[in-house]
Image 1 (cartoon, helix red, strand yellow):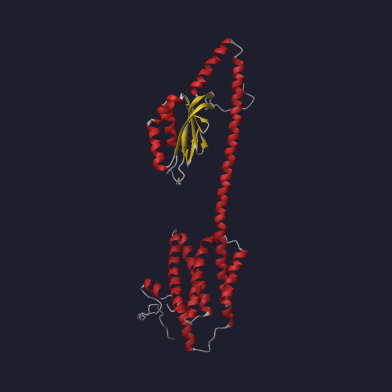
Image 2 (cartoon, rainbow over the protein chains, first blue to last red; image 1 turned 180 degrees about the vertical axis):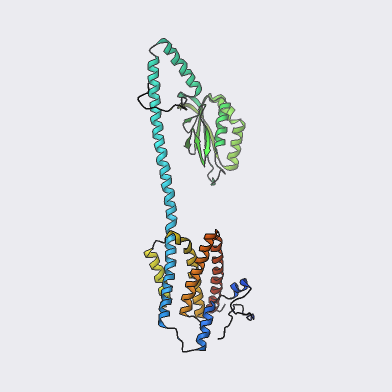
Length: 290
Length: 110
Protein backbone atom coordinates (compact mmCIF):
# COMPACT_ATOMS: atom_id res chain seq x y z
CA UNK A 1 0.00 0.00 0.00
CA UNK A 2 1.39 3.34 -1.03
CA UNK A 3 1.18 6.09 1.59
CA UNK A 4 1.72 9.60 0.48
CA UNK A 5 2.54 12.46 2.80
CA UNK A 6 0.26 15.32 2.09
CA UNK A 7 1.74 18.69 2.92
CA UNK A 8 0.45 22.16 2.23
CA UNK A 9 3.80 23.67 1.41
CA UNK A 10 4.69 21.14 -1.23
CA UNK A 11 7.89 20.20 0.55
CA UNK A 12 9.05 16.66 -0.18
CA UNK A 13 8.06 14.18 2.52
CA UNK A 14 10.75 13.30 4.99
CA UNK A 15 12.03 9.76 5.09
CA UNK A 16 10.60 8.84 8.47
CA UNK A 17 10.41 5.34 9.82
CA UNK A 18 6.62 5.68 9.97
CA UNK A 19 4.92 8.16 7.65
CA UNK A 20 2.58 9.56 10.31
CA UNK A 21 4.78 9.58 13.37
CA UNK A 22 7.29 12.33 13.36
CA UNK A 23 9.57 13.65 16.07
CA UNK A 24 8.75 17.15 15.01
CA UNK A 25 5.31 17.68 16.49
CA UNK A 26 4.87 21.31 15.53
CA UNK A 27 5.94 20.72 11.93
CA UNK A 28 3.33 17.96 11.75
CA UNK A 29 0.62 20.10 13.30
CA UNK A 30 1.15 22.79 10.74
CA UNK A 31 1.86 20.66 7.66
CA UNK A 32 -0.26 17.50 7.92
CA UNK A 33 -3.61 19.16 8.00
CA UNK A 34 -5.67 16.70 6.04
CA UNK A 35 -6.61 13.70 8.14
CA UNK A 36 -4.16 10.88 7.28
CA UNK A 37 -7.16 8.54 7.27
CA UNK A 38 -8.51 10.20 4.12
CA UNK A 39 -5.18 9.71 2.38
CA UNK A 40 -5.03 6.06 3.37
CA UNK A 41 -8.60 5.42 2.31
CA UNK A 42 -7.98 7.12 -1.03
CA UNK A 43 -4.89 5.01 -1.53
CA UNK A 44 -6.90 1.89 -0.71
CA UNK A 45 -9.55 2.86 -3.26
CA UNK A 46 -6.87 3.57 -5.82
CA UNK A 47 -5.42 0.11 -5.26
CA UNK A 48 -8.82 -1.56 -5.50
CA UNK A 49 -11.22 0.56 -7.60
CA UNK A 50 -14.13 -1.83 -7.05
CA UNK A 51 -14.33 -0.98 -3.32
CA UNK A 52 -17.01 1.72 -3.31
CA UNK A 53 -18.19 2.98 0.06
CA UNK A 54 -21.26 1.03 1.18
CA UNK A 55 -24.53 2.84 1.77
CA UNK A 56 -24.39 2.20 5.51
CA UNK A 57 -21.35 4.42 6.00
CA UNK A 58 -22.91 7.19 3.93
CA UNK A 59 -25.96 7.12 6.19
CA UNK A 60 -23.60 7.10 9.16
CA UNK A 61 -21.82 10.17 7.82
CA UNK A 62 -25.14 11.97 7.43
CA UNK A 63 -26.07 11.02 10.99
CA UNK A 64 -22.73 12.33 12.18
CA UNK A 65 -23.36 15.59 10.33
CA UNK A 66 -26.78 15.80 11.96
CA UNK A 67 -25.19 15.28 15.38
CA UNK A 68 -22.56 17.86 14.52
CA UNK A 69 -25.15 20.46 13.67
CA UNK A 70 -27.01 19.46 16.81
CA UNK A 71 -23.94 20.21 18.92
CA UNK A 72 -23.63 23.66 17.38
CA UNK A 73 -27.31 24.36 17.89
CA UNK A 74 -27.26 23.24 21.51
CA UNK A 75 -24.09 25.23 22.19
CA UNK A 76 -25.64 28.32 20.64
CA UNK A 77 -28.83 27.88 22.65
CA UNK A 78 -26.81 27.35 25.84
CA UNK A 79 -24.71 30.44 25.30
CA UNK A 80 -27.79 32.50 24.57
CA UNK A 81 -29.56 31.21 27.69
CA UNK A 82 -26.71 31.65 30.11
CA UNK A 83 -26.29 35.43 29.77
CA UNK A 84 -29.91 36.25 30.73
CA UNK A 85 -29.59 33.82 33.65
CA UNK A 86 -26.72 35.83 35.10
CA UNK A 87 -28.67 39.03 34.55
CA UNK A 88 -31.72 37.49 36.22
CA UNK A 89 -29.70 36.53 39.30
CA UNK A 90 -28.28 40.04 39.56
CA UNK A 91 -31.73 41.58 39.16
CA UNK A 92 -33.16 39.37 41.90
CA UNK A 93 -30.28 40.32 44.21
CA UNK A 94 -30.89 44.00 43.52
CA UNK A 95 -34.57 43.52 44.23
CA UNK A 96 -33.78 41.71 47.48
CA UNK A 97 -31.44 44.51 48.56
CA UNK A 98 -34.07 47.14 47.76
CA UNK A 99 -36.74 45.19 49.62
CA UNK A 100 -34.54 44.93 52.71
CA UNK A 101 -33.56 48.58 52.53
CA UNK A 102 -37.19 49.65 52.42
CA UNK A 103 -37.95 47.31 55.34
CA UNK A 104 -35.12 48.94 57.30
CA UNK A 105 -36.46 52.37 56.38
CA UNK A 106 -39.89 51.39 57.64
CA UNK A 107 -38.42 50.11 60.92
CA UNK A 108 -36.34 53.26 61.29
CA UNK A 109 -39.47 55.39 60.83
CA UNK A 110 -41.26 53.26 63.42
CA UNK A 111 -38.32 53.68 65.79
CA UNK A 112 -38.39 57.42 65.23
CA UNK A 113 -42.07 57.58 66.05
CA UNK A 114 -41.63 55.49 69.21
CA UNK A 115 -38.70 57.65 70.30
CA UNK A 116 -40.83 60.76 69.90
CA UNK A 117 -43.60 59.12 71.95
CA UNK A 118 -41.13 58.18 74.66
CA UNK A 119 -39.73 61.71 74.71
CA UNK A 120 -43.24 63.16 74.91
CA UNK A 121 -44.18 60.78 77.74
CA UNK A 122 -40.97 61.60 79.60
CA UNK A 123 -41.56 65.29 79.12
CA UNK A 124 -45.12 64.99 80.45
CA UNK A 125 -43.94 63.01 83.47
CA UNK A 126 -41.13 65.44 84.26
CA UNK A 127 -43.37 68.49 83.92
CA UNK A 128 -45.41 67.41 86.94
CA UNK A 129 -42.79 68.48 89.50
CA UNK A 130 -40.45 71.43 89.89
CA UNK A 131 -37.37 69.22 90.11
CA UNK A 132 -38.60 67.37 87.04
CA UNK A 133 -39.03 70.63 85.13
CA UNK A 134 -35.44 71.60 85.93
CA UNK A 135 -34.28 68.15 84.77
CA UNK A 136 -36.28 68.48 81.59
CA UNK A 137 -34.67 71.83 80.75
CA UNK A 138 -31.24 70.39 81.47
CA UNK A 139 -32.00 67.42 79.24
CA UNK A 140 -33.15 69.68 76.39
CA UNK A 141 -29.91 71.68 76.64
CA UNK A 142 -27.76 68.54 76.65
CA UNK A 143 -29.66 67.00 73.74
CA UNK A 144 -29.14 70.13 71.70
CA UNK A 145 -25.42 70.02 72.44
CA UNK A 146 -25.18 66.32 71.64
CA UNK A 147 -27.05 66.70 68.38
CA UNK A 148 -30.01 64.67 69.54
CA UNK A 149 -32.66 67.36 69.14
CA UNK A 150 -34.25 68.67 65.96
CA UNK A 151 -32.84 72.07 65.13
CA UNK A 152 -33.61 74.79 62.66
CA UNK A 153 -31.79 77.88 61.54
CA UNK A 154 -29.93 79.51 58.68
CA UNK A 155 -26.88 77.87 57.19
CA UNK A 156 -25.16 76.38 54.18
CA UNK A 157 -26.13 73.64 51.76
CA UNK A 158 -23.15 71.86 50.14
CA UNK A 159 -24.02 69.59 47.23
CA UNK A 160 -21.49 67.01 46.05
CA UNK A 161 -21.86 64.60 43.16
CA UNK A 162 -19.78 62.15 41.14
CA UNK A 163 -18.39 63.25 37.80
CA UNK A 164 -20.53 62.30 34.82
CA UNK A 165 -17.79 60.11 33.42
CA UNK A 166 -17.30 58.27 36.70
CA UNK A 167 -15.53 54.95 36.23
CA UNK A 168 -16.18 51.67 37.94
CA UNK A 169 -13.65 52.28 40.71
CA UNK A 170 -13.29 55.33 42.90
CA UNK A 171 -12.00 57.39 40.00
CA UNK A 172 -13.99 60.62 39.60
CA UNK A 173 -16.26 59.60 42.44
CA UNK A 174 -17.02 61.13 45.80
CA UNK A 175 -15.62 58.83 48.49
CA UNK A 176 -16.33 58.48 52.17
CA UNK A 177 -13.21 60.46 53.06
CA UNK A 178 -14.38 63.32 50.81
CA UNK A 179 -17.63 63.48 52.78
CA UNK A 180 -15.72 63.24 56.07
CA UNK A 181 -13.48 66.11 55.01
CA UNK A 182 -16.42 68.28 54.01
CA UNK A 183 -18.25 67.59 57.28
CA UNK A 184 -15.11 68.24 59.33
CA UNK A 185 -14.41 71.46 57.42
CA UNK A 186 -17.97 72.59 58.15
CA UNK A 187 -17.50 71.87 61.87
CA UNK A 188 -14.21 73.78 61.76
CA UNK A 189 -15.93 76.67 60.01
CA UNK A 190 -18.37 76.94 62.90
CA UNK A 191 -21.34 74.76 61.93
CA UNK A 192 -23.59 73.89 64.86
CA UNK A 193 -25.48 70.99 63.33
CA UNK A 194 -24.76 68.96 60.19
CA UNK A 195 -26.72 66.42 58.17
CA UNK A 196 -25.65 64.32 55.19
CA UNK A 197 -28.61 63.36 53.00
CA UNK A 198 -30.92 64.13 55.94
CA UNK A 199 -29.00 61.95 58.38
CA UNK A 200 -27.83 64.00 61.32
CA UNK A 201 -24.16 63.73 62.20
CA UNK A 202 -24.03 63.17 65.96
CA UNK A 203 -21.13 62.37 68.22
CA UNK A 204 -21.45 58.68 67.40
CA UNK A 205 -22.25 58.91 63.69
CA UNK A 206 -19.78 57.30 61.30
CA UNK A 207 -19.27 58.11 57.63
CA UNK A 208 -17.65 55.13 56.05
CA UNK A 209 -17.55 53.05 52.92
CA UNK A 210 -18.69 49.46 52.44
CA UNK A 211 -18.00 48.08 49.00
CA UNK A 212 -18.79 50.98 46.73
CA UNK A 213 -21.57 52.43 48.84
CA UNK A 214 -21.11 55.21 51.36
CA UNK A 215 -22.76 54.59 54.70
CA UNK A 216 -23.80 57.41 57.00
CA UNK A 217 -24.89 56.16 60.40
CA UNK A 218 -24.75 52.63 58.89
CA UNK A 219 -27.37 53.51 56.31
CA UNK A 220 -26.46 53.67 52.62
CA UNK A 221 -26.66 57.08 50.97
CA UNK A 222 -26.45 57.68 47.25
CA UNK A 223 -25.33 60.66 45.20
CA UNK A 224 -25.95 63.55 44.98
CA UNK A 225 -24.77 64.06 48.56
CA UNK A 226 -26.43 67.05 50.19
CA UNK A 227 -24.63 68.28 53.30
CA UNK A 228 -26.66 70.79 55.31
CA UNK A 229 -25.03 72.78 58.06
CA UNK A 230 -26.71 75.19 60.45
CA UNK A 231 -24.67 78.24 61.40
CA UNK A 232 -24.30 81.90 60.61
CA UNK A 233 -23.99 81.93 56.81
CA UNK A 234 -21.91 85.13 56.89
CA UNK A 235 -19.22 83.37 58.92
CA UNK A 236 -19.75 79.85 57.71
CA UNK A 237 -19.55 80.42 53.98
CA UNK A 238 -16.22 82.28 53.72
CA UNK A 239 -14.61 80.08 56.36
CA UNK A 240 -15.69 76.89 54.59
CA UNK A 241 -14.98 78.04 51.05
CA UNK A 242 -11.49 79.24 52.00
CA UNK A 243 -10.67 76.17 54.05
CA UNK A 244 -8.11 73.70 52.62
CA UNK A 245 -10.97 71.27 51.90
CA UNK A 246 -13.00 73.93 50.09
CA UNK A 247 -10.01 74.93 47.96
CA UNK A 248 -9.21 71.31 47.19
CA UNK A 249 -12.75 70.61 46.04
CA UNK A 250 -12.72 73.60 43.72
CA UNK A 251 -9.61 72.05 42.15
CA UNK A 252 -11.45 68.73 41.88
CA UNK A 253 -14.29 70.44 40.05
CA UNK A 254 -11.90 71.73 37.42
CA UNK A 255 -9.72 68.62 37.21
CA UNK A 256 -12.26 65.80 37.43
CA UNK A 257 -15.65 67.38 36.81
CA UNK A 258 -17.01 66.59 40.25
CA UNK A 259 -19.99 68.63 41.39
CA UNK A 260 -19.38 70.90 44.36
CA UNK A 261 -21.97 73.60 45.03
CA UNK A 262 -22.16 75.80 48.12
CA UNK A 263 -25.44 77.63 48.65
CA UNK A 264 -26.74 79.76 51.50
CA UNK A 265 -30.05 78.81 53.04
CA UNK A 266 -32.31 81.08 55.10
CA UNK A 267 -33.92 78.27 56.97
CA UNK A 268 -32.79 74.69 57.44
CA UNK A 269 -34.69 72.08 59.38
CA UNK A 270 -32.44 69.27 60.59
CA UNK A 271 -33.60 66.06 62.28
CA UNK A 272 -32.00 64.86 65.49
CA UNK A 273 -29.58 62.01 65.70
CA UNK A 274 -29.87 58.95 67.83
CA UNK A 275 -28.15 59.73 71.13
CA UNK A 276 -29.54 57.20 73.55
CA UNK A 277 -28.69 53.98 71.82
CA UNK A 278 -28.79 50.86 73.94
CA UNK A 279 -25.52 49.04 73.60
CA UNK A 280 -25.52 46.33 76.24
CA UNK A 281 -29.14 46.01 77.21
CA UNK A 282 -31.58 43.89 75.23
CA UNK A 283 -35.34 43.62 75.83
CA UNK A 284 -36.02 40.83 78.34
CA UNK A 285 -39.64 40.35 77.31
CA UNK A 286 -42.67 42.32 78.50
CA UNK A 287 -42.96 40.62 81.89
CA UNK A 288 -39.88 42.04 83.57
CA UNK A 289 -40.05 45.40 81.85
CA UNK A 290 -40.85 48.35 84.13
CA UNK B 1 -26.23 19.16 -0.90
CA UNK B 2 -27.74 16.47 1.29
CA UNK B 3 -24.88 16.71 3.85
CA UNK B 4 -25.44 20.47 4.05
CA UNK B 5 -29.15 19.92 4.68
CA UNK B 6 -28.31 17.39 7.38
CA UNK B 7 -26.01 19.91 9.06
CA UNK B 8 -28.55 22.74 8.94
CA UNK B 9 -31.26 20.36 10.17
CA UNK B 10 -29.01 19.44 13.10
CA UNK B 11 -28.50 23.10 14.02
CA UNK B 12 -32.23 23.79 13.82
CA UNK B 13 -33.03 20.70 15.91
CA UNK B 14 -30.46 21.70 18.53
CA UNK B 15 -31.83 25.24 18.69
CA UNK B 16 -35.48 24.16 18.81
CA UNK B 17 -35.31 21.15 21.11
CA UNK B 18 -32.69 22.68 23.44
CA UNK B 19 -31.97 19.45 25.29
CA UNK B 20 -30.71 20.37 28.74
CA UNK B 21 -27.01 19.59 28.87
CA UNK B 22 -26.17 17.96 32.19
CA UNK B 23 -23.83 20.03 34.35
CA UNK B 24 -20.94 17.55 34.26
CA UNK B 25 -21.04 17.60 30.47
CA UNK B 26 -21.01 21.36 30.09
CA UNK B 27 -17.21 21.89 30.17
CA UNK B 28 -16.94 19.57 27.17
CA UNK B 29 -19.49 21.37 25.01
CA UNK B 30 -17.05 24.03 23.71
CA UNK B 31 -14.52 21.28 22.95
CA UNK B 32 -17.20 19.34 21.07
CA UNK B 33 -18.08 22.46 19.10
CA UNK B 34 -14.47 22.99 18.03
CA UNK B 35 -13.98 19.27 17.25
CA UNK B 36 -17.13 19.41 15.11
CA UNK B 37 -15.79 22.47 13.26
CA UNK B 38 -12.53 20.63 12.65
CA UNK B 39 -14.34 17.54 11.34
CA UNK B 40 -16.50 19.57 8.96
CA UNK B 41 -13.65 21.62 7.52
CA UNK B 42 -11.45 18.52 7.30
CA UNK B 43 -14.25 16.74 5.45
CA UNK B 44 -14.84 19.58 3.02
CA UNK B 45 -11.13 19.85 2.35
CA UNK B 46 -10.89 16.08 1.70
CA UNK B 47 -13.93 16.36 -0.57
CA UNK B 48 -12.17 19.04 -2.62
CA UNK B 49 -8.99 16.94 -2.63
CA UNK B 50 -11.28 14.20 -4.00
CA UNK B 51 -10.25 11.80 -1.24
CA UNK B 52 -13.36 12.12 0.96
CA UNK B 53 -14.45 8.94 2.69
CA UNK B 54 -17.60 8.56 4.79
CA UNK B 55 -16.11 6.09 7.24
CA UNK B 56 -13.00 8.16 7.82
CA UNK B 57 -15.16 11.24 8.39
CA UNK B 58 -17.30 9.54 11.06
CA UNK B 59 -14.39 7.78 12.74
CA UNK B 60 -12.18 10.87 12.78
CA UNK B 61 -14.94 13.08 14.21
CA UNK B 62 -15.95 10.62 16.91
CA UNK B 63 -12.39 9.76 17.89
CA UNK B 64 -11.22 13.38 17.87
CA UNK B 65 -14.17 14.49 19.99
CA UNK B 66 -13.67 11.60 22.42
CA UNK B 67 -9.93 12.17 22.66
CA UNK B 68 -10.39 15.90 23.22
CA UNK B 69 -13.01 15.26 25.90
CA UNK B 70 -10.78 12.63 27.51
CA UNK B 71 -7.84 15.05 27.59
CA UNK B 72 -9.95 17.75 29.19
CA UNK B 73 -11.41 15.28 31.66
CA UNK B 74 -7.94 14.07 32.59
CA UNK B 75 -6.81 17.68 32.89
CA UNK B 76 -9.74 18.44 35.18
CA UNK B 77 -8.74 15.57 37.44
CA UNK B 78 -5.15 16.82 37.51
CA UNK B 79 -6.13 20.44 38.00
CA UNK B 80 -4.94 21.61 34.58
CA UNK B 81 -8.27 21.28 32.77
CA UNK B 82 -8.24 24.87 31.59
CA UNK B 83 -4.76 24.58 30.11
CA UNK B 84 -5.53 21.29 28.38
CA UNK B 85 -8.73 22.77 26.93
CA UNK B 86 -6.55 25.55 25.56
CA UNK B 87 -4.11 23.00 24.13
CA UNK B 88 -6.92 21.09 22.42
CA UNK B 89 -8.44 24.28 21.04
CA UNK B 90 -5.06 25.53 19.80
CA UNK B 91 -4.26 22.29 17.95
CA UNK B 92 -7.75 21.97 16.47
CA UNK B 93 -7.77 25.68 15.72
CA UNK B 94 -4.53 25.43 13.73
CA UNK B 95 -5.98 22.54 11.76
CA UNK B 96 -9.19 24.43 11.08
CA UNK B 97 -7.22 27.37 9.75
CA UNK B 98 -4.98 25.19 7.58
CA UNK B 99 -7.96 23.33 6.17
CA UNK B 100 -9.75 26.59 5.55
CA UNK B 101 -6.67 27.82 3.69
CA UNK B 102 -6.62 24.64 1.57
CA UNK B 103 -10.36 25.01 0.83
CA UNK B 104 -9.77 28.62 -0.16
CA UNK B 105 -6.97 27.58 -2.52
CA UNK B 106 -9.24 24.97 -4.05
CA UNK B 107 -12.16 27.29 -4.55
CA UNK B 108 -10.49 30.54 -5.54
CA UNK B 109 -7.12 29.27 -6.75
CA UNK B 110 -5.52 31.87 -4.52
